Image 1 (spheres, rainbow, N blue to C red):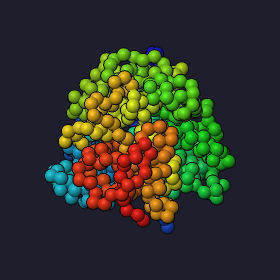
Image 2: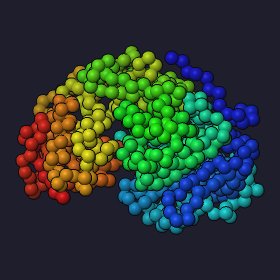
Image 3: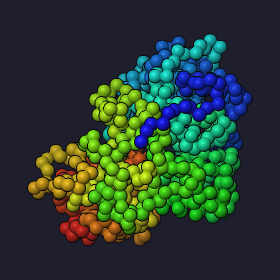
Amino acid sequence: MTTASITPRTPVRGTPRTFTDVVRERTDALAERDAFVFLPDDGQGSVPEHLTYAGLDRRARGIASWLREHGAVGRPVLLLHPPGTAFVAAFVGCLYAGSVAVPAPLPTDQGQQLARVAGILRDSGASAVLSTGAYVPLLEAWLASVALPRVRCLATDREDIGDPSSWRAPDTSPADLAFLQYTSGSTSEPKGVMVTHTNLLANEAAIGRWAGTHEGMVVGGWLPHYHDLGLIGHLLHSLYVGGLSVQMSPLSFLKRPRRWLEMIGDYRVEGSGAPDFAYDLCLRRVTDEQLARLDLSSWRCAPNGAEPVRADTLRAFVERFSPAGLRREVFAPCYGLAETTLLVTGADPATEPTIRTVDAAALEQGVLAVGEGRTLAGSGSARDCEVRIVAPGTDAPLADGLVGEIWVRGPSVTAGYFGNDAATADCFGADGWLRTGDLGVLDAGELFVTGRLKEVIVLAGRNLYPHDIERAAQSADPSLTRGAGAAFAVRSGRAAGAATEAVETAVSAASSVSAGSEREHLVLVQEVRLAAVRDGDLRAVATAAQSAIGREFAVPAGNVVLVKPGTVRRTTSGKVRRTTMRDLFLDGTLTPLYEVLEPAVRDLLGDAPDTTATAPSVGAPNATATGVSS
């Protein structure tokens, strides 16, 4: 496999050296066109918010002048905005100043998110915080509370920011940082990925060639602006091609999924993508009456990524929404990560996705073979990069058809982690190859992603993928929330203090049986909607989940913990934080609505609850159960 040469697909004059050059030429050529439209939540008197290319340029120049005056040139600047056009102006303002934008979620009163954003602020050493006028006073108070009162705040939605006429173009080089993309931390603490202008231009070019984007194209979505697909795919790519980006808030989508689909029809959106759960949510929440009013005939590229792509979702979505004009080939499963800027592989948007039925037992042994038991959706072929499958813990490439760690090399692979040389050397130090930490297999040039290296559950010499176990359990009862479970393994027989240690996993089935008296136990923490539980019988729900896991995987499923909605931790991009959930479980900090645990697992948690009752368990007859009824 060879690395394709990169020539940015853009009709701007000359060859842009930086993404800043692209934006400036776009604003000159398309001044009076809308660059962005933001759709507020439904409400009386709410109207769409428009931002033209000229308006974007003017606001960005003012922000850039302020950043220069306050010594932020070449330094990270934290962007904490609610959904809306103010974020785009702030991001471009950082480009115009030669500052390094750091998009992050707006802190709320949730302790986890506050701690995360404070960590990003300290790790990046940001010299300023940009937000909107409604939030700046709250942010200033928050900064004082975390002992960072000297960090300046600016409301970027004000009209009197800086002097746009005094702006001077920054002396930015292709190797300079365009922004820091903080990883979502599904298996570790967040780290700031250093995205250079070269990386960004290369990946935008790859996206353009893959998706066939063009000037004037309408893209749209609801993903957060700090999510890499939302930022690079829905916002920056529109600037790159000189198109229109139509956006709505994530909350607006979650409250009324139909609004996403209505937006596609109303604005003739051609490109809009999301994680798998979003398509599934539309399947479950869009009514027949709402479907009858939809027009999805303009939609020609629907990326599906950021979490495991389910073949069942692809099939069901096309079947459900084809009466609204949705074409069967619209889905384009893809694979990417922050460390590669965004896109690595993508399925051809002009053809139907590859769906492969494979032998489940062989896959558990690390081999892709035709058979029954598992259905995989392909994530397409490499786009302007090289992809290699490597035996974990080695530098030895594996042949097609064998599961291993996904490695990537190419111009979109970023410069490493900001201020973290050790982590950079660990992930980026393989002769130009990025060790992704993801597991996958190549077959005829197509990548099939199978899971995360650190999250593989090894039981009796078999490699089980947690998302498969979660899917099986969630299908057992309608009260179990789809995508809101965390399956992981814990090991009994360890000394005290082992609760905080990471699970030791391996991809190879060899030597996977624990030594001595140590044994791996499967645990599922799963959110349950109490209002949907038949007769309030949580015991029946847990038993159904156990039975589904035992039936499909033939493994003991003796440990099921049912929790209230919102308990399962997620990253900012919606991925389940299984390692975090395992730690919370072992630390005894979860509050179960109902749980059934094997005695050996309960012993790991310290003091058992006061009230216990014997309960049946698939594969674990000695488990005990506790819980509350509703």
